Length: 216
Image (cartoon, rainbow, N blue to C red):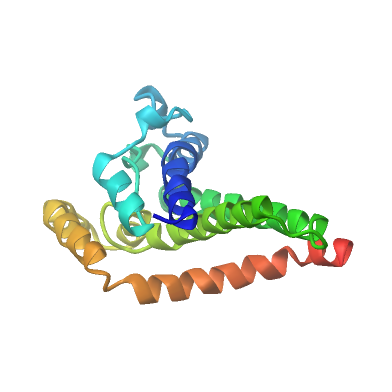
């Protein structure tokens, strides 16, 4: 196994224990701000990875680069504003991934300019680690916005659906989730997901253009 492959899987494990907790914490924090303390009462308003890790989601992330943690319990009926609270709470997790990916790209660009004249093996490894870190964060943001249970996009979708369709989705959620896992491992979604992730990357590349202006 090459050093690049080892580093790639190492970053994925780092994501499981560091970034997925941030993602779920963001959901719990947003829910509390909108008036629902369910997640806090169940010990999910924390960065402790043990509280958030989902075994199947973690395995999926290690093997495919896409994955999830245990969904944070949310009771939207407690929100001061039902629709706004539901949408913002659902978006909080993917947004945290975009923010972390943005910070990662800023760090990568600064290091790139700092060592531009002396490329070393260490820099190559740092570049591999940070690049994978950024890509996985952006991939998670895109992935979790898919409107399929148990992903965040499904919470956004159901917010705007009539109640009878919300009940139908809940009724068949287990079957939908199993089918979704099969689809993920089949690789069918790889191309559209990476296309969307690349669009998002281009967007944050533009937004980190100030780094280029300062150090160029």
